[in-house]
Image (cartoon, one colour):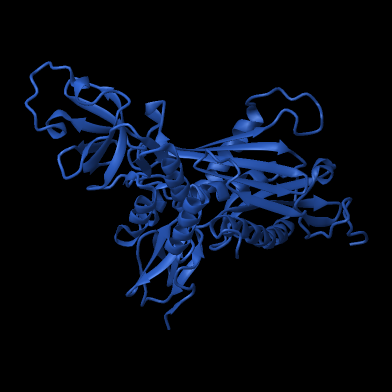
Length: 231
Length: 234
């Protein structure tokens, strides 16, 4: 007899038994030991069909192909840039992936992206852990104009964006800020005045802190309305 | 079994009061505090991050690097030279070996996961408190683990086998002190050291006692982790 030992959406910790029996299959961050399925991370248990997986609540960013991320340019080389994406190793942005302009040999690359610039970029390739390649060619990918950068925990990014972007569009609507969220947990935002920006920052921090709560969108809406009218 | 009360008034298989908190070092990737009696350990985890010197890197999996340190003011009041010493180096090594069997660092080749353990107050059982805190901190940092590690010391005082020695019992002569760590889910023992002499039967009994104590410690660890991630609710 196979049975589930935890409820769906229950918070689990490493080593916790999630299910018993061969009818359930291990998904992400779950492994099989004998006839038991065991969690390897702190997270929320989730069942889709026969697959039991854990949606992690903690952890560093792990680069994946096709992730859109926000990175900081840390050095300018002869044929490209090195970008800090919040992973143990810096990512490469090659010249040919950076711009569709014709760039003359020996040109000063800092005219395009200089050290300290933030870019919205996409990962094209992950080989082992040391090699991560980026591209700037794609819809919306660009060098970011002046704004605020805040850091959130990368497993919380899906909550900050919400289902079909519901959470982030709610925050945008109430604060009139432009907001971009990178998969690596960096958030860029820029608004018309400081108060709007701070409200957006507070809202995003609130989502991060309370990401395990159900019905969070309504709660954030209430928070935004209250802060708006209190001004 | 003429006198089975201990100096602290505890029963032979009674642990000192425990307290645990996760997320005590805000800027670390993961952190935890574990307090057992008057022994207080804080562990902070950083990484996975790039490992230097590069010759220590492993292309097949990440490396775990632990650093155990007893603070200069933590113990008896004697002057302690700050910084590393032979004892700290040994304990750092056994801590690594105690934690590594449950960690899966294969997703992070060429990187290091740094675990810093500081003992801010000591009353024996420091390596065990350190390992217990480190296990929680690693879970908090989101490092894939097959189980938590719980750790306790067992030993002998007079004729009695006892659990969780304090400094008075640890330093009594002839005393026996056995720090042990285990994965309570599988029963796998990942740390076993012994200071003193025991018969085979006594050792078996002592390990049984230790196993039960580890179960109790695991409950405290589990509660602390759930508390942080569940907003205080069970």
